[in-house]
Image 1 (cartoon, helix red, strand yellow):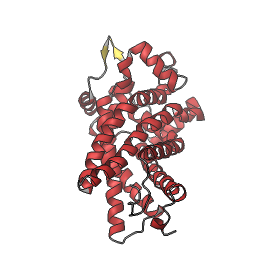
Image 2 (image 1 turned 90 degrees about the vertical axis):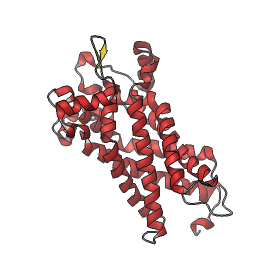
Image 3 (image 1 turned 120 degrees about the vertical axis):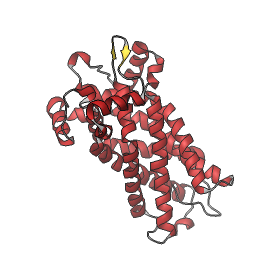
Amino acid sequence: MSKQRKEGDRPIPVYMRFIISGMAGVSATIVIHPLDVLKNRMQLSGEGGRKSDHSNTFQAFRNILSNEGPKGLYQGLSANICRQATYTTVRVGMYQSGVELLTGAGFGTFTSQILSGLTSGVTAAMVGAPSDVALVRMMSDGRLPEDQRRNYRHVGNAITRIVREEGFFTLWRGLLPATVRAILSSITQLVTYSRTKHYLISNGIMNDGPLCHFGCSLVAGLTYTICSNPVDVAKTRIQTMFSVDGKPQYSGIFDVWTKTVRTEGVKGLWKGFLPYYLRMGPQTTLLLVFTEQITYIYSVYILKNKESYGL
């Protein structure tokens, strides 16, 4: 994703790639968190054939403000920050380091990107699962009746109570759809961004700069949203499900898809698409642009690699 290193440049340490990724992820999520709440509420609306809570994104927005006030749009912010500090740090940092390592070992660029996308996605999903479960539950809590709300105070309280009340491994509930989504995220978001950027620059269509980064991130965000929305719907519903007479509401990702299609139609798999894209578009843009710019600042002003940037 970052500028290709030229001979004589000081390399960016591996640990700094992870730090930069985490900084970019946390910065982006602080801006777009309300869109994440809207996406979550839309995906749970009408679940199981019940009457839909929200007919569209704008109604969801009005309902949250009316019933919960502005703070309802920031439910689960601490969990989202924690998730970015774990999940995004590992996913983006491992992807960049993996691509550089594999290409240096003689693998082709595209092969390196795909392999790095797979490994970084799987690893990030496992590391970020606890904060992800806490995040989804905290964001959806406001839609439940008062007597069913979990009322987690913050991400630490959520994780502690989940372990105490439901068992340690509940923190990894929905791991399969989360892993599939993370792999799709790395391949359709990071690889699409890298390939689009390479195409535009190598063909002289755009120069390597903020405008190019912005355009490539929009393409990556749209590609990722289309491919991953059904997986995200399954993940959200599994992570928030209750047990009925001791039996979980869903047995897995395919059970969610089957029941959703049966009660809500195929379009139910893309429920919440608009807020999801409105979330993923800016999220992808901010994440990748911040990553590029923080990398630039570190490379130029800390490592003094000014000649590579024409300075």
